[in-house]
Image (tube, rainbow over the protein chains, first blue to last red):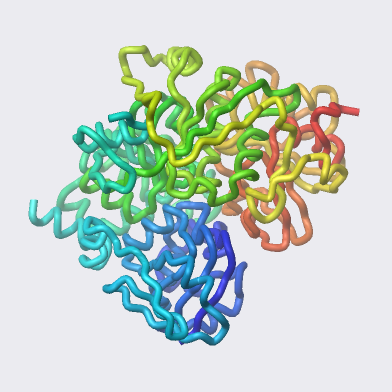
Length: 160
Length: 421
């Protein structure tokens, strides 16, 4: 498992450039361009089970769900950050990508430290030291547990 | 119980007596805005649309503005698919290529009204606080779900009270105010929050308020709002909306705020947001003389009639520097027509400006006006992220239309208060 570490204000153009937004929408189209202008090595080397660790305001900028779809498709387990921008946060809920807002964990992390995530308990362990993060409210967990917003909405429509 | 604007509005829309920060509420927005991304949105729910149809034909507002006219077979097909969807489902509010930038259209056609709730799959949906509405950005998947169900969840945010006092000096504009605020509190300074503007706001027209509300998302805000006053009422009256068509929502005097900030407008000077972050704000004097190759006047932030008028006043009888390309995009067809009528377009074109169709254009690097490596653009847009205008090795600087117009003449960043030499 590799930890990809980035700084503050990682914006949507860094995650997935605006020039592709009307030509790429499927996971396969998105994957090669993920983080292209931030870290060209990412899309070539990212592996299933990797984690992204970042600073404040991760995902700021546009309403752009391609990075969320892409990160989920390449198998990123979670993005752990000091804070997230709100549209990115909603997009992650809607696609079922785990976001962990835990500034103390980000600060504690050092190069090569092992990370163990226990999302159900709201716990992240960095190099043996445990940190807690707030669990999602029940209304939002229901969306995640359904496998994302569209499966949730489909069930709701069927039961109407 | 005393409440802020957003608490009152979300209480009303969720059918509750009160709403407190952190509470999750279910709401039915008055409108859902989508643009060129409508094609990708409806693709997600193709079979559901066939079975259930859209929740309501008046809910969606669809404007084609991001890649217009189409740049390729793929984007042309996107537009075609959207037009077919609009016809099939009898969508009431559709604006085809050439009508303008979605946010401008929502406001100037009276779809955003005081006390209304609008959501949109575009981050600058937060602009409608200019006329006292609550509006906020969501993603494509949520827009798809809303098209089918008409409802979604919102978390009641904390509120930041911004009190403005004093009067702006000549040569300083609403754009300088919001850039100054973002520079002060940072690109995440209002994360998840609702922002209310209080105090000396009478000096701001609805155009100015639009610029300020539009950039709320650049400090992380969920929404920004100016309360309804004579200026709002006059504006709405001018677009044919009468006082009985809306119910304004204000904040209680003793409402509880997470943070209260005061800015003295008389102390604000022309500023520029430098690469590659909107909160990297500097006094224009600090980068005075920096060479620029492209200037852009337009977008949902600063493409209104007053913005074009300010630029034309500066450029009248002058020429854009030979090393500079000046791109001009009126924010809507209506603004374009008014600017034509007033001779503003003639002035801008004579001075060397290149007119682009009313739309988003080069702002997001998806269409026209892209930059080359090593180039610098001074723009009235709202974002200067690395790569934003199609090239990661170019630089974008953000400023007011006056600063951009003066700088276009000199071919380098210039303080607008120094006027035209």
